[in-house]
Length: 124
Image (cartoon, rainbow, N blue to C red; front, top):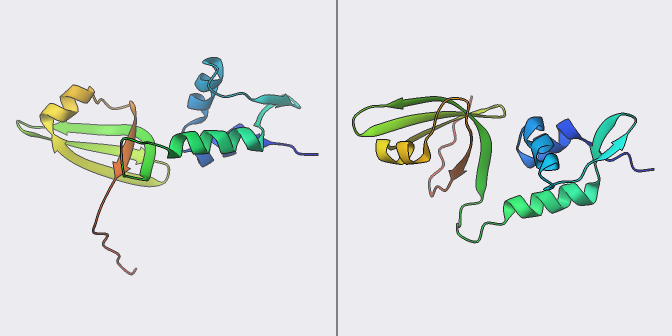
């Protein structure tokens, strides 16, 4: 018998929080089953979510890390946005105007979209 994927594991696989999955369930965006008092996601439903989140016809970027905005530092022209995306810290430098238009504040859920032609790799 297939036990399905627990909500915590599903959240990690999709790259969102457990609370986000619960909100998506309330909104009808995802359907969980209840087994033994636990929410589980059927494997086919997880596959559907992963396909849905990986397709973005408006962007060639494929590296997306969803997380929480930890800090936003603005000066006259620039803004530094720090995100906690799972075990990763992502720092984005953007114009202050862009940060203001996005309304970014600490505690917001946001997605870092990474498109780079250069990746620096260092040895420990």
